[in-house]
Structure formats: C-alpha cells, structure tokens
Image 1 (cartoon, rainbow, N blue to C red):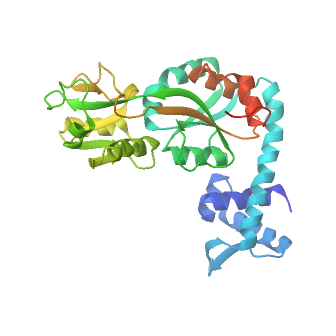
Image 2: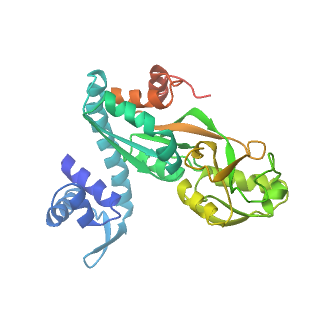
Image 3: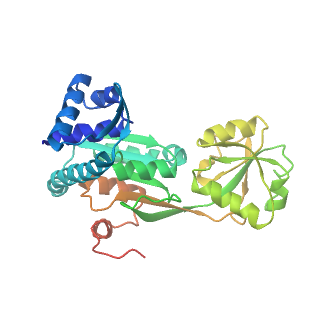
Length: 311
C-alpha cells in the first residue's frame, strides 16, 4: 500500500465517486485511477466500492472504514508538513477562505487587499457558500479558514472563534409604506412580502423564530444566498429584504431605505472556523488578524490543540 492509493481513493469519494473528475483534480488519467483503486482493493482483499457493471454506486462497509482511516493518515501527513512551515514564516503558497456572499462582498475587500499587499506570492482563493457548506469545506480540508455564523449542525472536527456581531436591517424602496417608520413592529412586517436568506443560513432560522414567537406567519416570497440579488428584487417591488446591516452602502444603495431592525431580531455572531489539531501557516494567522484583530494567535493555537478550554 502507498500514499498515492489513499490519496486517489479519497479524491474519488470527494468527487462523488466520479473517477473522471478525480483524475482531472489530481492531473492524472482515468485508467490510472482505476488501476490504483483495483490495486488497493487487491492488497486489502476487500471490495471498497459497490459497483454495477462499470459504474460505482457507493462505498461498501469496509470502504467506509478505510475512508475514515485514509483521511486521518493524509491529514496527519499534511499536518507534519505544515508544522515546519508554520515556524518558517513562509511567504508563498495557497490560502483558501470560505465565506458567505455577504462577507465576500462587503467585509473582506479591504482585508483581502491588505493581505495581498503583504503576501503577493500567496495565491488567495475565495469560496462562497452557506454556513453548513463553509463548515464542511473546512472540516474536509477544502478550505483553510471559514467565516460565517455557526451552522445548526457543526462538524465535530471544527472549532469556531467568535469575532464580530451583525445586526439586521430592512431594505425598502423609498415609496414603501414602511420607509418612513423608524422602528417597525413584527406585526407590521408580517403584512408585507419579505425577502431574506435561504434556510441553510442561521439568520433565516433566527428571523423565522422571531415571527413565530409572536404568533405571526411571515410571507417569504423569495429567499436567496446573494444580498445583491435580494436588493434587485426589492427594487423590482417584490418585497422588503431583511439583511445584515453591513450589506447596505449609502452611496450604492441611495435608492433604498435602510430601516433599523436590531430591536426585532437577535444579532448574528460571526465566527472564524478552523479545523482542530491543524498547524496553520503564519500567513493564515495574519489573514485572521486583519479580519478579527481581537483574536490572538496564541489563543487560537492553544484551542486548536486543546491546550485551552472553550467558554
């Protein structure tokens, strides 16, 4: 058995059991991946995949067990490599940051600009998703840093570090009946079509709970992941949008009215998500510091390796 077998096996699973996609991701050929998989099964003397003719339908019981062990092995090997780079102050490499559209669009531009100026030889990749997707990417190693509210279901290998709070606002056209109301009630909002984030976002659940606690049934005519899409439909007269306050720009959104809603909905606690027991490169901590200066590097390192307790 060799590490290449395990690497290819994990990549096949990550590619939804698509050998062609796995081969492309690892810059090799489909026949080569197939040969490696057959060699691994032959060496272990078990079938790892459920097959139907030439198609892979899923993993067998032994395949699930081997996958868990293989991921641990590859993770620890990468961790050993990273351990040296942490102390080497490396100034080149890759950094994958996963964030919601709101943060990618409104919170991160200045952070990204400052980081690139500091590390011009680091390739920065920005992935966008909902909190569950972001946590999953960090847990699987497909992202180095996650920036989001904590999802309802948290992967066990992820640690979240609180850093910011975001309040809600209501975006309305200037001619809307509520545009002149400084502090609308939930009862007033419930009478109008509403637009907000999709269900996987923690804020969706918080907004819905606020209405339900008052015995109200809000009329969500549209949900989306992209705040700019929500604004488009507010402008089209489809409804009022309940969004994060940072998503409003007085210059770009001069045709919309931002109505205070912090008295109606609990704030979202935005957190940095990192994988437990992972050595982070020095520039990863520098990126975190640019986004959340209150998070100390030593504190994060201690928590990631269970040297400090989480409160």
